Each structure stands twice: as C-alpha cells, then as structure tokens.
Image (cartoon, rainbow, N blue to C red):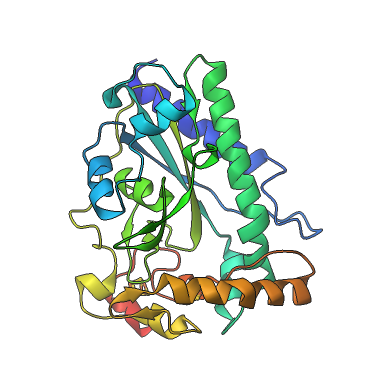
Length: 289
Ligand code: SF4
Ligand code: SF4
C-alpha cells in the first residue's frame, strides 16, 4: 500500500470502531453513543513542533521517538520513521445541547461522556495499537504508557508528558482558544486521542499559521464568551487559570455528579458549550450568539 492508502486504511479503521463499537456508549441505559463521527490527522514523528513543545510545555514532554523508546526499549529508532495518528471525538448534538442549558454544573450526558466516553477513548487507543500490531507495525498509545505522568509546567501549570491537544495541533486538527481548549473544524466540545506507529505516513496539512488562529479573541479581538460561561472565573483575558478550573472540577462537580446522577465522575465543559466555537471554527458573525 502507498502512504496515502495506508493512511486511508487507518482512518477507516478508526471510523469503523467509533461507529460500530458497543463501547462508544454513554452507558445511560439507552443506546446512546458517547461520540459522533471522528476527525483524524497525522503528524510526522520528526516534526520540529515536537521539539518546540519541549520549550513551550516543558522539557518533560516526549517526542514521538522518546515515547517509542519507552514502549520498545533497546530498539533503534529515528523520528522520521514514525507517524503520529491523532483523532477528535466530537460530543454528540444531544450532549452539547444539554450542557448549553447548564450554568454551574455539567449535564448528565456531559458527565457520562467525560467518564464513559473517555473509557471508550482508551479502548480506541488499544484497538488501533492492536490493529496496527496485527499488520506488523510497532505501535503504542503514549497516554497508556505506565511512564505517562501529569507534570507541572512553568508556563502552563498542569501539564503532562504527552499532551493530546498539542499533538492534535501538530496533526493539523486545530488551534488553541482563550480557554486553552483546541478549536477544531468540529469545534472544541470534543475529546482527543493519539497513537504512534513505526510507519512513514504523509502528514496532514496544517491549515493555519498561528497556534491561536481560530479563536476570535486572538484573531479579531472579539468574543471572549468562554470567560462569561465559566462559573468560577477561571478564564480571563490572560487565559485559563488551571488551578481554579481543577478546584471546581473536584470536589465541586464530582460531588454534584455523585449526588445527582449516581456515579463516580466529574466534568464541566461549560466553556466548551454555548460559545461560538462549540461545534465549528467560529467566524466573526458568530459573536452575536
Ligand atoms: S469562546 Fe470565543 S474567545 Fe473563547 S475560545 Fe471560543 S472563540 Fe475564543
Ligand atoms: S471547564 Fe468549567 S471551570 Fe474549567 S475553565 Fe471551563 S467553564 Fe471554567
């Protein structure tokens, strides 16, 4: 298969799993998927952006070759022989609509997508690694490595050794918003995942020149709707205060989810819904929303 055909095959494998797996479920007792149709992007393993992330996020952030080396110790590898497959799992219309009505705590569907949807995202990572391995390609999901860790970043506060948002940015899937979420062609109400494979694939185009290009606050000096949506004032003109956000998530929303929906979970996503970038790349006319 050519690089293009292989990339197409991988994309189809991801799509098929999302559309047919029973694990793509909100586990609400009704047959409701956690996520809608995915978007897929590919980055080269030796993309210079991965080196840049060490400066921006922290030196602890892995390059694809470093992550590969942890999964396959002792193997000789060059970044150019690796590709990173990144995906966007969009929240469903129903989940977005429910969360739009909320002013302090998450809607039940949103909280379910955060917990059970992310369980499916883990299953998707495992499934893609299995599928690629069965075809003879060495593959790994960095988020599932035992060495993956949350870390403190000087510039970003809470960070980790593999940021799905930064990887998706490298794979052409979106740019960062004022709220620190990634704005993709299907908006920022979504979750992200990725897998590294020892295979050269044609990278996806990055249809942007600036890492904040899709956010109206940075590109037009307007909007800022996510600031109004945050119930705890964690988003200001300076960006997102991750500490404030996390303090609201736990214990605030976790107590609410347990008391109201009866499962151990948490979530918020108010800044991801009822905003112009909820489900698309916003345009300046959207600020009257
Ligand atoms: S709501 Fe507006 S300011 Fe906030 S991330 Fe989206 S486009 Fe940017
Ligand atoms: S997730 Fe919730 S608490 Fe965190 S920044 Fe967004 S709106 Fe604020």
